[in-house]
Image (tube, rainbow, N blue to C red; front, top):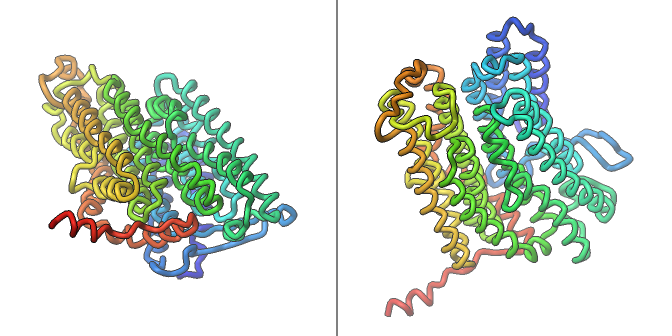
Length: 510
């Protein structure tokens, strides 16, 4: 199966499905949902086969395909995946069917076309797969920009309060970041011998000054996309206005393009500049961890609160990347996966609560657990996973980031640890104000608040809960896939793990 064109098929399949769904009659909304769900499950099945076919310990980039596109510019449709990309592709394949199920009635409440809504979700899946699978810098840039379009319409046409403002802000921020990257892409093409092939560009020697400017162009685009402080302000608006399912994909997958881009492009292509900018990147990560966590504590809107928690989590990922150790790097990639699962679950569950109450304001809840105990329990579990409770998947990744950072930069690791304390504060405070305590009398008058999790909603949350628990106790199948790619990236940067201080430990014990 290694010769099968997995990546091109996975990229094209959701687009074909989107065209089929979009042209279904508007009067047949159920058919549109069923076709979209079936198509996304087909993509999931193919992704599982690809995961099984991936050879751990084999070539760094596998499933490579290349088809001519613009030969004059040296552009081609080149796809390839390492362990980092493979993990993100599986995350997409798992989340999209669950988001479609969770969004079963979202488009109907907006009184807009149901087929178009689910077609947009499939188009988004196509662009997300393409951006992680691309091994041509120009192709990556194209997917990086086109990915904005379906999300813009999902927010602007199907979102909630201030959706148009949030959609425009999201689009403009990302577009500006894309312009920085476009300038760097052109510069890279010039100094790289007029090629966009990733593997060829990793062998190019670039002067120090040029390398720093090119790094900065890519890094700014990725820092805005992630987002890192101080480029974060678009995320709470977009996450707060987007439908819950679209927000789960926005925060769970779309934002990972930023951190993935740093790992795939900034570090291997500009290794010296990466080391030169590392202290600044670590500072931005630390500020993001503390600042976003403090803002999350004071939020009155559930979706905005979850969005701010994600900014804090991206700070941890940034610290893990720029610590330049295998442990921290593996933890950062694992964090990208686990954050997608945990925050995706949290956004979907929050969306279920908001749909029942008709409000995202925390003050409109209170004691909801007395009416919907099962839903409240899942919210509590998702919150605990978000704060990285031991036994859940995010704990493993956060632990790896901190211990890998501590070996090379103790002050950074200690400051980052404060984020764990603040995470407990904003998560437990949110759970307490929404589902615990005295029942809000107004909730008793809302008929929908008397309906606990339906069978469809149980099907949505059960796989995510199972994966969070499984990876919390047994992350080895994923770390085995990630480790070789992270080690290769560290070698590109010229960094090696510090030797254990065995002698110092033995001397201290005497």
